[in-house]
Image (cartoon, rainbow, N blue to C red):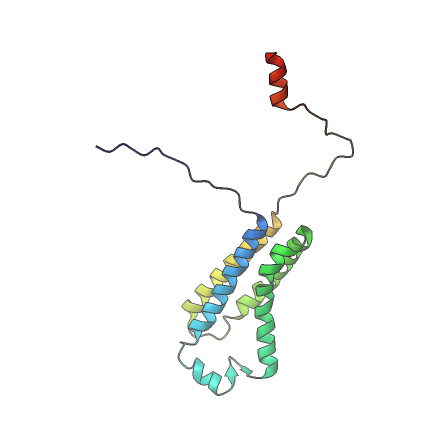
Length: 165
C-alpha cells in the first residue's frame, strides 16, 4: 500500500487592484477583437467591406481613425491601470468604463446575428461592470497620524536573552 500524501493548501495571495483592472481591460480587448474577427464570417459582411461600407458608414480615413481611437482607449487602459497614481487610475477607470457602456451597446445596432452579438456585448458589459466594481471598491489606507506613534521596541530575541540570563 502506498502512504497518503499530506494535504496542503494552495497559496492564495490577494491580487492587487491594479492587476485586476489591467487583466479585465486585457480580457475586454481580446473579447472585443474576437467578436469583430468572428463577425467577418457573418454572411454579407466581407462583401459590404469590399464595397466600402461598414454598417451604414462609408469606409474612409475618418472611419478608420475613429475605429482606431475607440480601440486604442481600452488598449491604453491596460497600461494606465498599472502606471497612473492610484487616485488618477481609479477615476480614469471609472470614467472610461462608464463611457464604454453605450459604445459597446451601440455595436448591436442593425446586426442580424443577434445571439452572437448579444452574447459578445453581454460579456463585454460584464467586464466593464467588473472594471467599475474594482475601481469603485479600491481599498483605502488610513491617513497617517500627526502624532509620533512609532516607539522604538526592543528586538524580541534580545529581550528573551536577557530573561534567560
